[in-house]
Amino acid sequence: MLIDDLASAPNPQFVRPNWIDLTGTWNFAFDDANAGIRERWFDAPERLTERIQLPYPPESRLSGIHDTGYHTRLWYARTFEAPMMRSNDRLRLCFGAVDYEATVWVDGSVAGSHAGGHTPFSFDITDALRSDSEHTIVVRVHDDPLDIEQPRGKQDWRAAPHGIWYYRTSGIWQPVWLEVVPENRITLLHWSFDASTWSINYEIDLEYPSAAGTELVIEFEQEDHPFPGVRIAVAGRSVAGSVSLLGSRRVMDPGAALWSPERPNLIGARVTLSAPNAIDDVVYSYLGLRTVDTTSRRVLLNGQPRYLRLVLEQGYWPESQLVAPSPEALEREVELILALGFNGARIHQKIEDPRFHYWADRKGLLLWGEMPSPFTYSDLGISRHAKEWEEAVMRDRNHPSIVAWVPFNESWGVNEVGRSREQQHAVASAYHRTHQLDGTRPVIGNDGWEHVEADIFTIHDYSWDAELLRRRYQSAGDLVSTIETFFPGSRSLVTERFRHEHKPVIVSEYGGVSFAPSEGEEWYGYGKVGTTEEYVAKYRELTTALTSSEHLCGFCYTQLTDTEQETNGLLDENRQPKAPIELLREITMS
Image: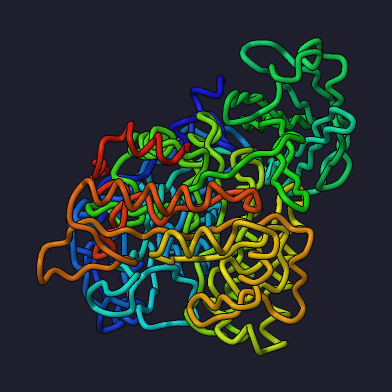
């Protein structure tokens, strides 16, 4: 299976052949009276009389429901025919993401439950299957729109969007699929690149301890050129090791092997688990060979300074909300970002669809991954945040395009972090846990201000005065003065425990130029203009104010697209540019 063939899979980094797509038409019902459990709707799916199109949330137009009201409980159901299965095969039911708490029944039996609105989960449903040829899945979702301890990102708690918040995305909002797997199977693949030894490090976990004689075979190839592989005798539930690439002639030309935006080279991987008297488990994946480091002034990609030209990406569509309207729209989104001259995007308050990361990997777009935040601090909110963030990092850490992690943004969910030692420890814990899960990328504990722990010093600066913006970052002395006197959002840039010296500095939010909203129309931005000429001029003067500084390692413009009342995109909500795209590109790259 070639890397091209992985594009349509729900998670292109972890693909089994012959997976079965379960998106499409499902039965659906709101349960505002909370009667479903009492009346055993899981045994009577015919009570779900509406029809919904998955994977679109019921608030969206493409779902066919388009109800943006408060509905705490949602039910889904559909039938399926079990695929052909051999002796000792198991059938797993997989969900890309369900917001927020999901309980799943198959043929009337509980298959399992999961809490967390943005990360995947799966259940072995083999033993729940009755002897009938047709089987039924029922899913109950609990998603309280007013639960501010729930990691929800930019989903609004009000009935209609206001400020910087958007319509809610409830229930099933990423793909659902089936996989036929052997009884003992591969559950985790983790790749990393050691440039000092030119080796691929691997970690592979299995469902159960291995029987005697079990083997793992790892095969790599790049553009039909085989790389060295390995055959491993397995004892236990996990294996770890490395494969040296020094025997491959391709490393004589590192540019032919390393991943970068200019040459987004990917290496395909096939992992086969074989055991005596058992069916093989085969998983397809891929990786990119690249390193990300920092110096006191710069971010380094493959050991070379890389100026970060990022754009804030909300990942929101008017017809489908946090879900792309089609898989092709994810590819197009990456292409638009690159066409505008950016070399990266900061995913904002969202765990993106894995297929978006795939296209970033394929086309060479650098990404910052960020966790959606709860709206308030509590033990429950932090524990929910930590669990889901861990699941997100483990899902996405193989993507070469992701070059930084952001567990918190602008003190959301840690509202008193500037004064509270307890909340500072929460941010520090997320920073260190992220590094423990993935030591190959920088981590920014709390992006924008009130830094506790960070490998890159990030600043959110929405000054509308380009000359003031320029003066803040022109010299080392200017930067020190800015750190001491600038309070964005009435917040200090640093906490007492943070040392900003010897860290690269990036203005990770600026701009927010709103273009000519109609008189009386609700809008949100950081300033507005009335003509295309004014729009281009303001984008140019704010951007060049930052790019003229030798003391910044990059910028992130707010934002890529208009989103609901936020009319500050370079593109409108339908992805049409507000000025000639070639002109916007020239400014971005100036």
